[in-house]
Amino acid sequence: MRARVESSSTRAIFHRVVVRMKAHLEHDDDMRFRASADGGAHILFDAGDAATRRGPSPMQGALLAAMACTASDVVEILRKERVAFTSLEIEGEAERAKDSPRVFTKIHLHYRIRGDGIRESAVTRAIDLSSEKYCSVGVMLRRGGVEFVNTHEILPPG
Image 1: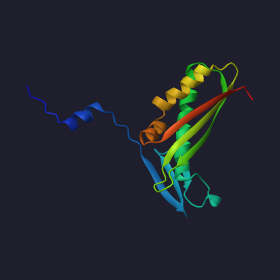
Image 2: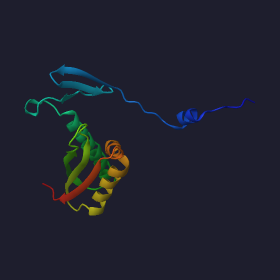
Image 3: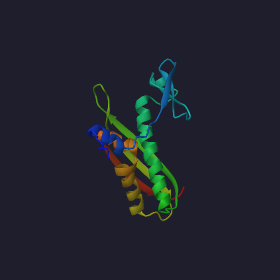
Image 4: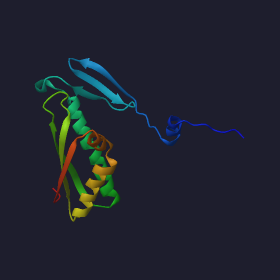
């Protein structure tokens, strides 16, 4: 019988599942960059002058990614709970540090859910689960020190 020797770094490899994502970015023109991940659709990022932008800036992209991440969670959770909502909208606002690097310091997300007879508790639970557990982008930003404020309103169908 052979003894198996493991270092702490080897043990970590066996106990951690690593999921890899591949992405590609190329310079388009000026301060524009065309990017895709895992062979998916392209996104045009534009870090140039706001007046001539043809796509989100990289920081706008980060805010939009956080919003899309939580939106998909909230929709999935509400559907699993059989909440009959007709629409979901999120308004986002981010505050940034004054000095470089001008990282996000605070993000406020305001959720608008439309439908008849929607329980307040169901909406609160869906947003909290997304915010605290499922939204990888939001959790990653929180771990980096970004403060999140979530508010919501339930509106009639319209």
